[in-house]
Structures are given as C-alpha cells and as structure tokens.
Length: 160
Image (spheres, rainbow, N blue to C red):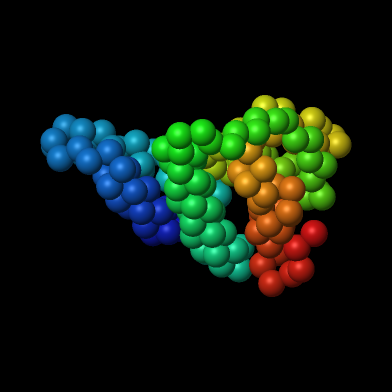
C-alpha cells in the first residue's frame, strides 16, 4: 500500500480525532497527530472506499433518526404523569448470517434509548433485548433494524 494513501488515511483519522476531542493545545495536537499516523502506518490494510461505504452512508443517518425518535419517545414517557410502561424481555432470532452484523445489531439496539441488548447467543444468533415498552421494541420485532443492517452486507441486495 502506498505511503501517500496511508498518509491521507492518517490525516483523516487526525481530523476526526481533533473534531471529537476539541483539544486546541499544541502538545495534545502533536500527540493526536502522532497517534493517528501510527495507526495509519501500523495497520495491515487501510480501508478503501467502495460499494460497502454506500451502505454505511445510508445506515448511519437511518440509525441516527431512530435514536432521535426513541429519545423523544422516552422523554414523552418520562414527562407523562402515568406512563404506560411495559418493561419486558424479548428473544429475537436474527436472520443475519454473519456475526459482525449480529454484533452491530446488538450495539444498535443498545444505542437506541428504551432498549438494551442483554445477551447475544452464538451460533444461533438469538438476541435477548430489554425494552421499556412495546413501541420501543417495534424496530426489533417488526424487522426494520434487521433489514437495515442486512443491506450493509450487500448494498442494493434485498435484505434478509
């Protein structure tokens, strides 16, 4: 892999680090740059843009929208004098074949307010999810989350 590509990847990592860390001090900027370049030059293969990036470009905003909607739903539950809470555990057998996709599904569930993945049984792909109410569990039980993640495996292909 060319050094120019690795240098560009290191600069992208540094820019991301700088935006997320908000550290304007020269010493910390230098350490961030050194760490970013170390990662860029020590990893065996730099991720290259390709068709799979399109899937992520669609999935990330979709998940962000779901997280915002779930935040509003949980806020509404909190502010309601007598909320209709129905906490329960759901066992969901995932149709996703690859473990990284099932792990992504578990993490996406946990990121969404009102739900948390408590277990992922392998090799069956059964997720145990705690949901605060039925509405919070609707993306899981309805299959919307699984379909969105399934499109990451092969963008343009039908979801499982």
